[in-house]
Image 1 (cartoon, rainbow, N blue to C red):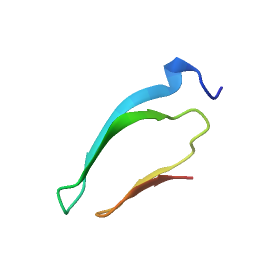
Image 2: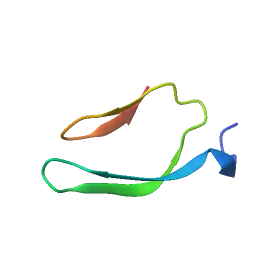
Image 3: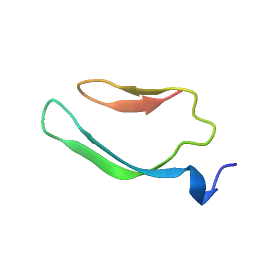
Image 4: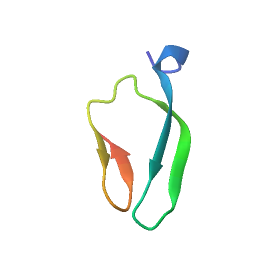
Length: 43
């Protein structure tokens, strides 16, 4: 259900270098969310 507003969740991640991701993420269809010290990605 891509584009479904119920799928979007405000997500904040602060990485080891103090950079940050702070944005809505559409989690519909995402099986895995991988967060490392340096980045974040979905599978």
